Image (cartoon, rainbow, N blue to C red; front, side, top):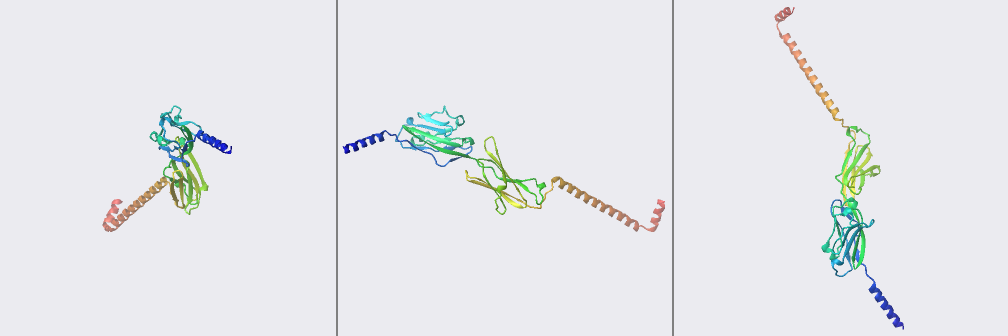
Length: 293
């Protein structure tokens, strides 16, 4: 009896195990995928746990994890894009020649900032499995430039408004301001982020500092592993007058030099005339005086 009960339990477990369907092992990257703005990106997805199968038995679905909107669909051995989200139109494809090898990755062309988010990969071959991954979008900033207020307004002891400008980057970069001694001045910074029509950011950073020192601005983009740095040196006591003042001073100097030269010429002419009269004989002088009278 005890042996019979053990045998019955074994038979039940055997049929229970046979009736259970083992789900597919669908795998995606654990770390977020970083896609460069404007370029093509591959969202990796692979599956295993099934023996050889025909392509007609396979279904692959990519969708947005939050809204459940279709990104790309494949079944009956071909793409099925009638319910595809409009903004993905003509921008997605699978590697169909690699599907039977377990590669269900998605190619996304011309990546936009709006594409950033979580994507789910569903695969079905008799049974099914799914996994979700995160895609982040990044764009490098332009060359860094540091400028400051009008030079004509600079005087020793004045505060100077420094601006650290870079365009076209996404997402918002990390910024570090330092003086010549390496002190962190970032707490004095105000940041203005302006988004353009493509959703990218332009960063303008302003800090009020005393002149007569060197200041550097460092911009870092962790997603791309990039850094940029620019610096400026402001020398205290160097005041640059506006162009109009320089022209006025130059004209005054030229006029003064002309007057001095003219006075010197007149003085020389008078002296030569007097010396000539003194060299004339007395008779000629009296005759000249009579003619005058």
